[in-house]
Each structure stands twice: as structure tokens, then as C-alpha cells.
Length: 213
Image 1 (tube, rainbow, N blue to C red):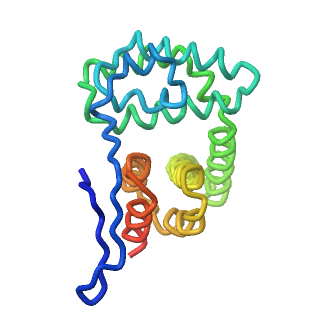
Image 2 (cartoon, rainbow, N blue to C red):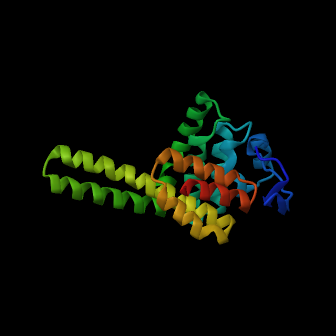
Image 3 (cartoon, rainbow, N blue to C red):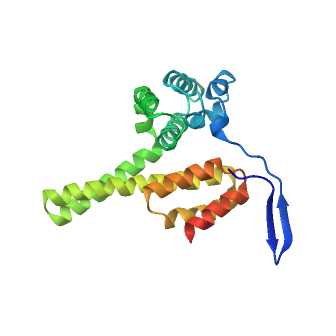
């Protein structure tokens, strides 16, 4: 975990010294977040300690009530929960499966996400087109599989740009460049997690620039 201060030098002379605060999600108490109704942090609950299936279900029901007139926004909150649950290392495998089983009750939210719907349509179209060109059932299956993989990559690239733009709009162009250069799902998922937990814009810029090299 990064430690303050951040010192930038040029020719052994200090250019900038920035004293920042860290925000270690793995030290936060998920139960307290829900008790205090910090709904803005609910998508990050899977990264915190003391998270469990009942707590996640309660959080989702509260979000459903909060965004009852904004189905698209509610669906995106659900997508973020799924992404962080898949990437977190603070939740044991058994508990992770329990939470996933509970989240499946809200699978319709995932399907209603405008981003997911768009990606599925594009993925299916690309897969069918390639299958027709090859003219064989095997070609169709391979085309569909590749289309789904590319669709997942497009979704992650979009999530990366969206998450950076939401926190640091001045880095949006750099985020789009980074997303376009990164076409590996695991690398994209890791970068999204690092960006979401980065303490400041300087740290996010470093992560994005490093992914472009």
C-alpha cells in the first residue's frame, strides 16, 4: 500500500511533495457501512471485511429501493458488485459462493444493464457473422465464443474509462488510450481494481501510463 508523502524530483531537486490519505478498503467494516447506509460505497462492499451473503442481499434491496426509478443506474451498481466480488481476496471461497448464490436472485439487474445488453448484442452479432463466413457449425461456435470474449473485454474497457472519468475527469483521455491498448481480461480487471482503490489522481495517472508502455 502506498505511503505518503509522494515526492516527485527532477535532477535530484524536489518538484512536488504531496501528502495524501490512504483508503484501504480491506480494513473497512462492511456491516458498519450498511448500518450507516453509506449507499455510495455499497458496490465496494465485497472488498471489505465482515461481508456475508445476508449483508449483500440487504445492500442490494436498499439500492433497489433507492434507485427504483433509475433501473439503468441500479443495474450498473449490481455489475460493479459482481466485478469486485470476482476480484476480491478478502472473501473466502466458501463465503464467496454463498454471496454469488444470493446475488443470483438479482440476476435480472445484471441483464438489464445497458452496458451488458449492448455488449451481448455486439458479441452475438460478431459471433454469428463469423460463423456464417466460415459456413460450418464449428465456425459458428468458435465465432460465438470469440464474440463473447471480445464483448467481455469491451465491457471491462468501458468500466475502466467510466471509473476514471467519474473520479478524475482530467484523466479521461488517458483512460481511453489505456483501455484501447489493454485487451487481456485479467489485466483489465486488475487495472480497474487498482484504479478504484488508488489514493489520488497522481497514482491513477501512473497506473494508466504504466499500462500503455
